Image (cartoon, rainbow, N blue to C red; front, side, top):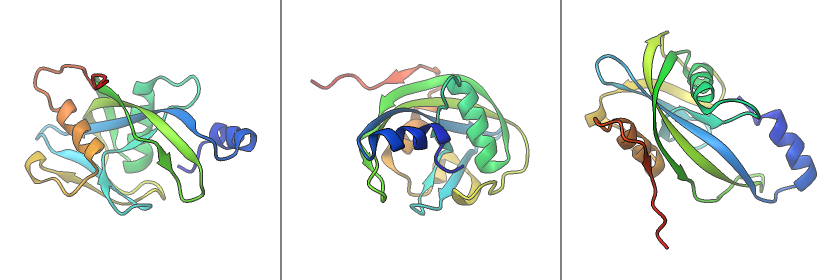
Amino acid sequence: MPTPDFILTLRDMIGVHPLWLPGVKAVVTDDGGRLLLVRRADTGRWTVPAGIVEPGEEPAATAVREVFEETGVHVAVTHVAGVGTTAPVIYPNGDHAQYLDVVMACAYLNGEARVNDDENLEVAWFDASELPDMPPLHRRAIEWALDPERRAHFVADSA
């Protein structure tokens, strides 16, 4: 999905100045413990499905929506795996943003994994012991979601 309309409206008002946005990472596992990953068109890197929470949308609903939009797979959120903050991002067009990063653990329900949008080049299932190279926050999301105690993780203030 392209940039949400509400962000385009905000950008018309504030230009490239920093936006603080809620985001969701969805860590999807199937009955065999495999993980659903997407290879992003913008960076070429493998990640978990992720996206921006729309105004008024619950983060769990965002996770379900984003997984389907990106992969064609239907999931159920099982628990919140953690909450953190991303580093500030500067996009190629000059927009600045930073994200509250809500990690949701999700269970596969049905659907055939496929590229279902223009944001991704590939969609595939991976064994947890054979993951491709991934950005650190996506690896962290997987670690949090696979915690057998289902603890909700967070990043303690380092100051």
